[in-house]
Image (cartoon, helix red, strand yellow):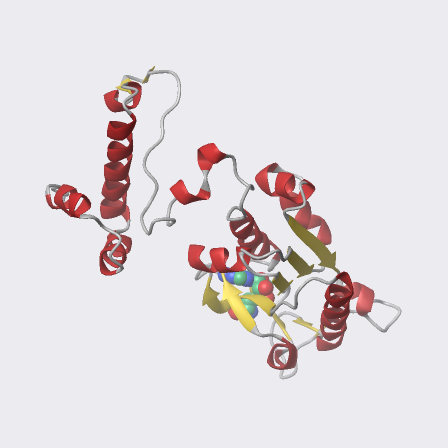
Length: 257
Ligand code: SAM
């Protein structure tokens, strides 16, 4: 990771929504410690009429409103100038969209080691296509479903990226132990009490034997992946991320039908 700053610029009609990640939890702590930066920009501040209009009816008719290109393009220009003035690296303009590329842990890692992104949170039915054609480098999606605006998707992406910044997480829940980090899912976790609703904590976790605990965690992670996401296990195998011991463990498993 270089000495650049991870800075996000979020273009949104609802800047207050960003409080969810700037005021709470791990992302807020990392922000206070200067590990990343966020600036919100409201396209309403870049409108040219007295009513601060940011949307209009669609040509051709039909339901919903369309976000005007002009306030958005001027916001993007202001963001670019501000980034330049602040000496932070140039960043791609990304529109949040259900039609975009699926956001993954790999993309979150790439983002974390970059200078950030200029994220456009859409609202209403759509953004004028000409703005997308002229000023947007890529479109990213959080999944095959539609939410009411791009703010939540943008915040999910920023949160996922910030977790990968060195020092953002405590050692004890390092991003390297989480699902997807090693190409497989995380293992199950337990805390006090030792007995809950008739269920005990697995014996090995109370043994204090670090090597056995670490092997057990690896096996449980493999088992969880085999049961819940066999596609990931297959990909990990193809990428050469499974050891001979992993393969021996997996081949001994009988899955319920
Ligand atoms: N009419 C659009 C379509 O069907 O593709 C959906 C518009 S949606 C109601 C409004 C905004 O929410 C979008 O511009 C986008 O920014 C955001 N959005 C909705 N679903 C999303 C998803 N799955 N991933 C990322 N952004 C999403």
